[in-house]
Image 1: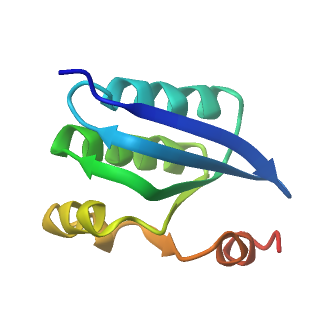
Image 2 (image 1 turned 30 degrees about the vertical axis):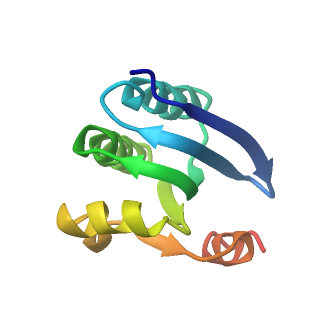
Length: 117
């Protein structure tokens, strides 16, 4: 079974927005990890990941976010998660990730959070 995964990246006022679509699971989590690694390698420190079009996330997919959060903290960066779908939010709550990530409902909230609004 092939999983669908796609993303777009754009930067607004120094904040990098990553919009993710599809599935984050055992078949696609490496692609998401590669996105984060590329952003960190390019010195992006303020990252917002829009999850409202993610239909499913597995524990492997969620693990990518844990690794990315650790790496962002090492470079004094931050990751904010935007509008996770109900399914994604349930997995994040089950894994305790809602306690360690910042969440936002809109791009404006993210820009305000980073002082870039």
